[in-house]
Image 1 (spheres, rainbow, N blue to C red):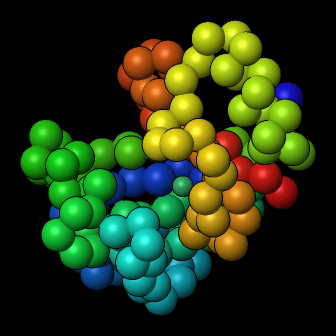
Image 2 (cartoon, rainbow, N blue to C red):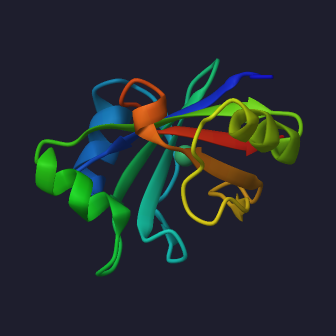
Length: 134
Ligand code: CO
C-alpha cells in the first residue's frame, strides 16, 4: 500500500533561521517561505535527491505547530509522509484494520495540492503519519 517516502516534516521555532541553516550549512536547495493559511503553517521545502524535508513554522492563532513547539521548544520531527496510489482505498483499509484517521476522515488538499490524510499517532508508535495520493 505504501509508496515512496514523500517528505519528513520538521517543526521549527524560527523558519528563516532554519531555512538559512539548511541552505548554507548543509548546502541544500531550499524554497522560499510559503504561507498555507488553511493548514495554519508556513512551509519551506528542502529538496533532496530521494525525498524532501518540509520545515514547518507557525502561521496564525490556531496553528497546529504552536502546540507542538510548546511541548518541543527546540523544534523536532512533526510527521512523516508516505505516498499512496489511492487515498480512499488506503483509508478504508486502515479503518478496517482499526487505525484512526484524524479530523473528519475526508482527504484535504495538502501542501503540494494533492489529497492528504493524517493517521492517529497513537496507532503508529507515537508518530504522526501523513498519506498523500500521488
Ligand atoms: Co506533510
